[in-house]
Image (cartoon, rainbow, N blue to C red; front, side, top):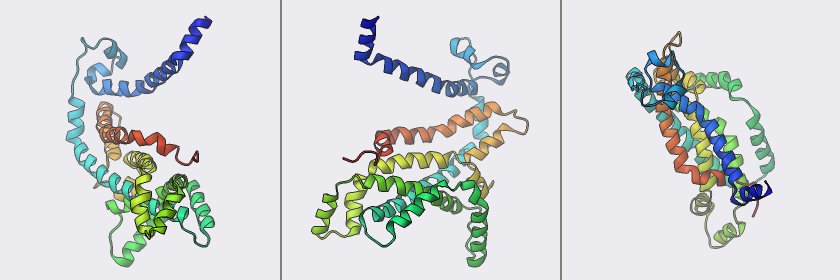
Length: 289
């Protein structure tokens, strides 16, 4: 028994088996959703999805649910979701990176106080601020005759504003780990703050930027409340379309399963495309070199 334990410890099989079990357990609901979306309604309603998993050759497979989802306007909702998500991810990234640079490398009066207030803003729930923000947009629209509500821009502003405190906090922690000697050498050579930020700090902060971009992209992509309140039904995003696919009595649950997989495609591409930066950015500032 001790020899077996020693072998498992040396080859790290115990950790690998544990991770395998976690991956299987985590993937089971998604696998069930996929199988459900590919089975006819008459079969899916009377038999569990795992029967098709263990006996795939005798199971009838169909893409009707995916066709129904696309015919119901899912493709247009996909475009609307991209139009909301991409700017709402890029805007807080750029603004917060500039602010984090100022909080890290510039000296100005009240810097620590302002940063503490900024961090405190993270505890304010978004839902409690929806009505004041909406009223402010309506007042702005009446005063300047610039339409905000019912447009993509309103969702960009709200998502960016509420993402800013966390983004600045993450970026500042990461930038504090960067070698200050390099910034001082650049200043001695006559580089401006603008040049230091764009040519030195930003390229070195790619892990933190990518890590936050993943979180922000997934958050905005899966959001329902802000898109529904500020953009509306005329430019419905995918989360709203999935709710409509379900139907009043829940009869469209297979269409929802298919639509969910359609909505998964782009987030998966984003995550796998940026995953090499994910862990490095997630641990940004936790250890100083």
